[in-house]
Image (cartoon, rainbow, N blue to C red):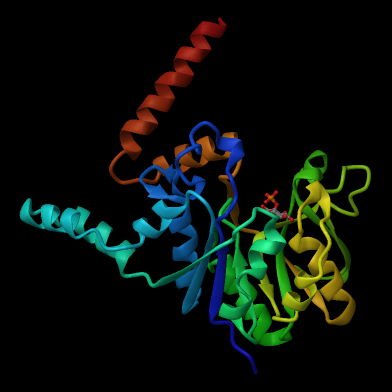
Length: 295
Ligand code: G1P
């Protein structure tokens, strides 16, 4: 029986949705309160029992490598000033072992994943996209790994989205359930219009894949948006071996979208021990002010 040990985090995207903020800063480094979004993803991988992580970077992504590297000057400074809690936060990021590889040309998610072929070898692995932060009692990546222990098959996480939003996602065509929340799938379609969409079940950025996907990606023609799409390769993989979809029932925060990013900052701020009380007071007074303006 095979075990999943490796994760890939594609982080080569240009981050155009957040321009001009992302002109000189990697979008993965934009913080939710005080933690870069990519750190949440790395923490989910570790909490799921992943042993080896490869981040696919591109031009301008050096800050991601620096973030997980030691910063001796900063550590010394915090130590000298007795700032133990801050020091612990900084040390937490250096304790994590990561590998990095560059995607040389921005050809799409499928091509980014293909860069991990040598790292992955002949093992099942997970792909974790940075635009979705997930919260549940069992981390979503771990849920997919638990499914794999039983099925030994590729499985993607999906979630119901509003019908008018299907063109933002890969959408599955489900064909019956294997068990509660685990679907058989006939088609995987990248970014269909609401008219074309076979369902409202969208792929949400966590994939557990078998290594045969790489042979398909090597010959994958560009699809939606002229990019090499992971969804198209998965659709082909499903012709030769079963690919399942696991419905996620936890909380998803879409931080790849402006509104979702701001909302997530507020929601995490309301849980953050340092600022939660003051943020709550601020929001209550803001709502009261808006109500009086309306009258
Ligand atoms: C990518 C995938 C898409 C998936 C989405 C989830 O799209 O191509 O299938 O539904 O991530 O966030 P992107 O958001 O990179 O355009």
